[in-house]
Image 1 (cartoon, one colour):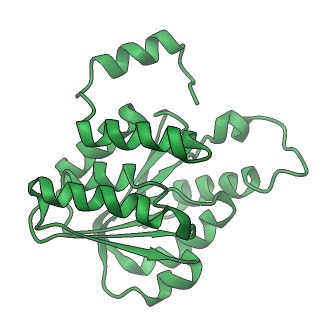
Image 2 (cartoon, one colour; image 1 turned 60 degrees about the vertical axis):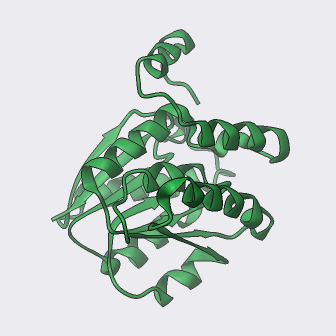
Amino acid sequence: MFFLPKNLDNYIVAHSEDEPQILQDLARETHQKVLQPIMLSGPYQGRVLSMISHLKAPLRVLEIGTFTGYSALCIAEGMPANSELITIDINEELEDFAAGYFARFRESGNNNISITQKIGDATQLLPELEGTFDLVFIDADKPNYVNYFHLIMDKVQAGSLIISDNVLWHGKVVEDLNEKDKSTPVLLEYNKLLKEDPRLQTVLLSVRDGLTLSRVL
C-alpha cells in the first residue's frame, strides 16, 4: 500500500539503509511461494522496525503475527545478546518457512538471540505468557486488535513500546464504512484507544499502511 507517489516511495527506500540479504531472500521466496505477499513489512518499514529496535535494544519482544518471519528478523537485528523474541501466528503452514530463516539468522552470528514460535489463536495464547515485554509488535488479524490491546497491557511496563501495524488500513479509516467491513470499525476503535489511554504516549506514523508507536508511561 502506497500513500505517497511510487517514485517518491522508491526514493525514500533508496536513501535508507539497504535491506539485508537474508531479508531480500525471504521476501523473494515469500512472493514465489506464499499467498498475499503484501503482508510482508517490506524494505522501508522493515528498516524502520530495525531502527526502533536498535534504539530500544529490547531484551524481551512479543510479536503477534509472524507471517513468514520478516518483521521478526527486522526487530531481532536490534536485540542484544541473551534476549528473547516470542512470535505468535495462527497459520501452522508457515511455521517451517519462518523457522528456516530464523535458523539462518542465528547461524549468521546471532545465536545468542532466542526466537520462539507459537502456533495458535493469540487470544488464547497471550494469557499463558509470563513476565513483561520491552517491545510488542501487533500485526495480525485486524478484528482482534482491541482484544490484543487489552490482553497485552498487563504484559508491558513503563518504558515498553507497543508498535501497531496497518492502522490506516488502506485509507479506509477516513472513508465511509462498508457494512460488510469487519476490520475498519475495530481499527477506528483501536486507534481511539491508543490515543486516549492515559497509560500511553502515542504517535501515528504514515509509514506504509500506518504504523503507531505507543510508549507505556
